[in-house]
Amino acid sequence: MMYDLIIIGGGPAGVTAAIYAARHKLKTLLITRSFGGQIARKAVEIENYPGFEKISGLELIQRFEKQARKQNIDIERDLVEKVKKIRKGFLVATTSRTRFQSKAVIVASGADPRPLEVPGEKEFIGRGVSYCTACDAPLFQEKAVAVVGGGNSGFEAALALTNYARKVYILEFLPQVKADPSLRELARRKKVEVRVNAALKEIQGEKFVEAVVYQDRRSKKTIVLKVQGVFVEIGSQPATSFVRDLVDFSKRDEIIVDHKT
Ligand SMILES: Cc1cc2nc3c(=O)[nH]c(=O)nc-3n(C[C@H](O)[C@H](O)[C@H](O)COP(=O)(O)OP(=O)(O)OC[C@H]3O[C@@H](n4cnc5c(N)ncnc54)[C@H](O)[C@@H]3O)c2cc1C
Figure 1: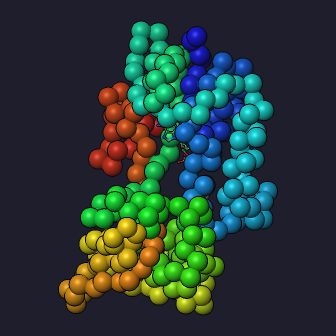
Figure 2 (figure 1 turned 90 degrees about the horizontal axis):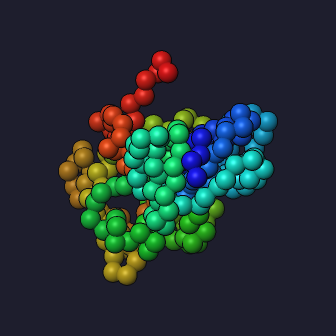
């Protein structure tokens, strides 16, 4: 079947596009790996969504999915591997080996967490290394954990972790953290220990994470910090590889768009 429109992604952008496509009576397919996107990683309540004074990421995602499913559109839970140009439009291929065709495609695949790319990171995913505080914080009851990244997301992750872990560190590469003053104040009150100028070198352990190794960029000393959990909060990277051969990319793998169209 030839759809009018295929939307890739079920985060805020994809769901919004789906609502409008349905309203315009386009024959639409929404393909998404999951609903909610980056909101699923939100460690504390969301407080900047008009209409909700406070709402948890999970509740907002459930509302997104419910609203998307009420639209007159098709929905597939799948991962898009490739989008190709064909004569009459586009061919969208997914990991479950399904092929879909449409006249137009909206790429709303957002971003994935940026990895640390240090030895030990990949080996310990699910064994102490996490990219989702909202999902994994309760597993670190009475443990010592390090959050890598001193931005708002890092501080929010650290604050959520103080509800479970006995000790929470924040490791920031730069000489100062970038988080908002209100978050810094909350973290100070919750006794989160912030270490700046920390260049992460390695994650160590046997079966599970046992330590992170970083270099203090000022003193040049190598420091081994005994922790059982490492939460990665150093930003995100565009989830756009499936259109690499189709559109122009910036140096940071962002799709270059024509802002006039
Ligand atoms: C920790 C954290 C806290 C945040 N807190 C706030 C906040 O308090 N307030 C705020 O306004 N914003 C916040 N943000 C930012 C906000 O979450 C993002 O701006 C928003 O989610 C972007 O929406 P999006 O739909 O563009 O992309 P995303 O949310 O990234 O959604 C992309 C969707 O595409 C899907 N997808 C990706 N690749 C594929 C593929 N190949 N095939 C199929 N599906 C795919 C994903 O599964 C996902 O559902 C936060 C972000 C993070 C990481």
